[in-house]
Length: 199
Image (tube, rainbow, N blue to C red; front, side, top):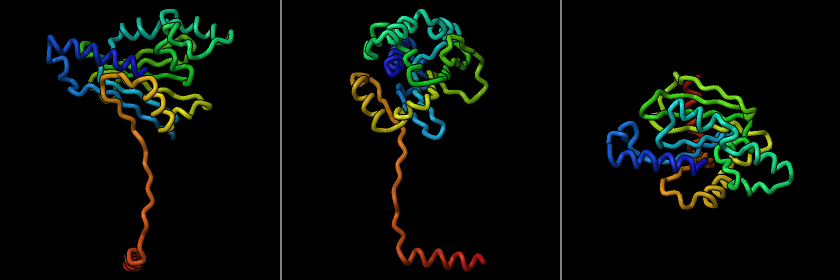
């Protein structure tokens, strides 16, 4: 998915060479990875070229085009999962870890759309009335219960380092940090005094 984002960024960068206004909707060319352990979603967001409605239908809507069927058949016959590249599966590899995939996308020449599918082969596309993403694509994976390791900082960093080290755009991973603060006795007493004053 990060490679797809990189390709989309290459396309908009190439278009901007002949028409600088193509970047007006979003100057920064980047990829963001946003895990949400509460919602159990993993979001990959890029500021690439985005997709038109017909791109969504043609690129994401055809299971045969992606080779997913052949890959799933080979997998059930005992093929190694690392063979995924041979089948040109690309986008549909998301369904190895997710039950539902929601793609929000905005191309400069079209409206913002939401594409949604739950791996059964059928999908919906609707006009997005929500806040604009500017330009690009946001892929939100609703992870299967047994795939929550893909929400951990360690696992995501491993995957990005292993498979995306030659991507020429910044990739940021949103992380949650916790820190313990020690409260001195003085501060503790001040808080108690404040509480007494309130009463």
